[in-house]
Length: 154
Length: 154
DNA sequence: TATTGTTATACTCTATAACTATA
DNA sequence: TATAGTTATAGAGTATAACAATA
Image (cartoon, rainbow over all chains, first blue to last red; front, side, top):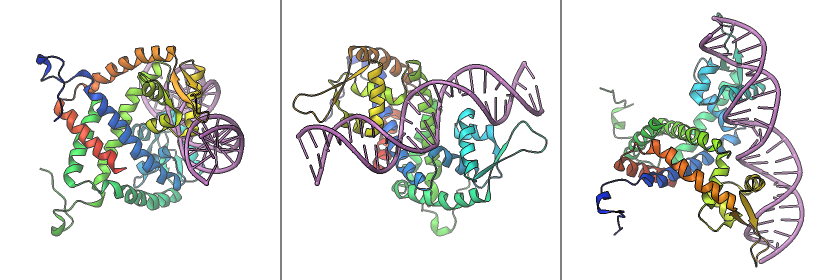
């Protein structure tokens, strides 16, 4: 039987201000564990996590302006320039100047980029599914609810 | 009313293999949002997130061997050397050679490090509590449960 | 003037592997 | 031989701010 600590009788129903700390630690460690697992697989494909993020975001689309890509991936524009540069050097992505707007670029996967996406994205999903697949449908739903709530806080 | 998609009548009770994908995306974005929020505050104190992680782990302890610190923070040993170096240069931390074992070091906060810890750790908790405090006690418990389950997968 | 993106700084972190020195 | 930690390598990502070009 756990002793439910209360600093005074009148606090019994309250939540301590620091009660979230262990929860936050769980968030950090859970994410670290996940991202290490994920990143190892991504590196095998010769990509870094941000590069994979970009490829995944652009896969099966007709491309999108860099500022929208930055917004979706939460990579800041200065950083995104470098990430895009490296993907372009690898021949996986192209900057297209859209007709009628010469102030923005559209990032589009090249055929090689699409090919890589078609190969590694399903493989990565399969790899991750080996772990996520252990969650029941109910657990998945609860997890989704909790994470959305968490995200809404920030 | 959402249309509950089922590929065939016999799949109604099953979970699609890819059902976890949106959940995973939520995990990534929720964590990104959290860590950006957290990191901004940490940077104001002149620390990087890994440095803060180390300071937080060592605060209110009598120090610990580097390999244990590496294990707790999930920072690999090669990387940890650099992080520790920088904290040592800042005068926040010291490597101590324990009596009877000259093969390992013990990382200990200096008085300046303890002072910084005493100042910024509570302030950081207060800063984070502004957001986590919006969760009810029940939500906190559910969140903890879900995160532990997630972590157990990896 | 506001938006889009690049460039320039200056670090910090990262994985990986070879290496040294203990035990 | 196994363990603890450092060093060397080689990038890659990060924030930030100044900048150029276009709308």
